[in-house]
Length: 204
Image (tube, rainbow, N blue to C red; front, side, top):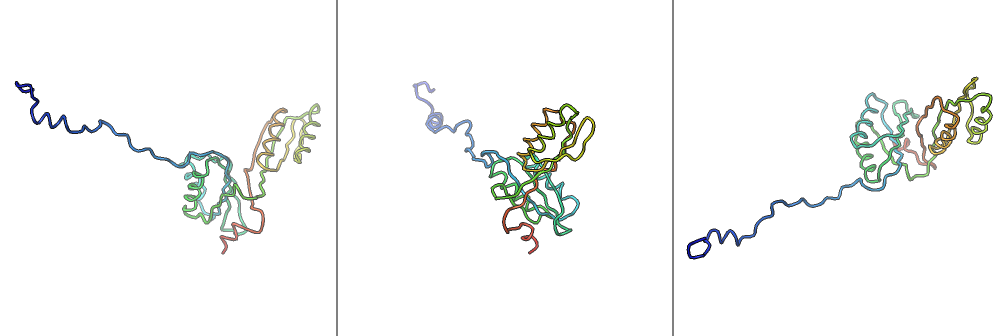
């Protein structure tokens, strides 16, 4: 401040100029992949070569997907294999993952069949504790779920169950009441209903 009570010109100019805020937050961004999470089933047709399975699993891990089931099998073409993956995610995230999966080396075709009419099956072998006291109950339960007994021992039996993932889950839940000694599941395999074929699309 000058002796006459007036502010120097340079200070006055600075005080009159608008001051920039100390910090400006970046604009908000809407990121895809935050919708409702539900189960998806993907079918991938791949060349039967070493390393393909590892690349598929690595991609899903990089996208933060946990593969719930994975079934790999031969097709009618000896050089081509078929993968069926089940995982959970929202529609946008799974669609992006499917597109990236299709770009991988040796991947010929990818299809999300979640909403398609399909035939879906899984096989499970369940070794259950069973003796003379409860064996009849286990056999009745297996019959109700159209399962069959493939091995019978003095203190256990092995039930072979087939059906959708939900049907197999339901039977396993009931058999847990008797005590499950061992369990193995194949993972889901699916095939679209009707005349369409993902494998014929690859053959063309």
